Image (cartoon, rainbow, N blue to C red; front, side):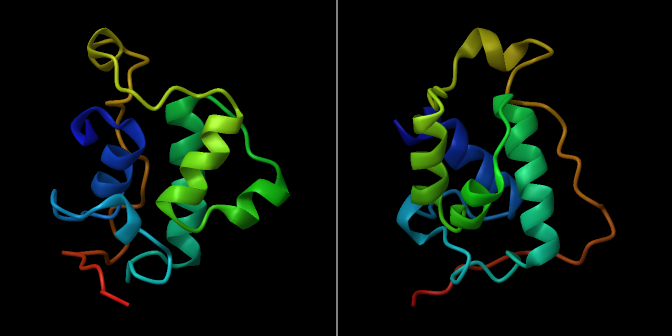
Amino acid sequence: MQDSDALLRLLREFFNLPPDVQPQEITQNAVAAWDSLAMVQLIADLQGTFRIDFDVDEIGRLRSYEEIRATLLKKDVSLVRQRAAACGPEGIQQQNSRDPDHPRGSQTVSSH
């Protein structure tokens, strides 16, 4: 099921995380690359990918996979990746708009 989880896939790709990283391990405290610039870029990617907007209070809570997932579900966003949607121009496979010069490199997740 995790392979069909659009949010998990987005976060793994965004932070360049290994495919075996579990959702509960994806938190702002555990992912070294999750700094303030990455947060702004992540919000933009989430809003573009899922075609929603976050208010200021919601943005303040987007600090982990679980918190992002809960917020998206409250907005009635489906997190199950649809094959047809992934192939279309509006699918979740859109190009990431991150700054290519931002030093992310290979990221690791700490086990705190």
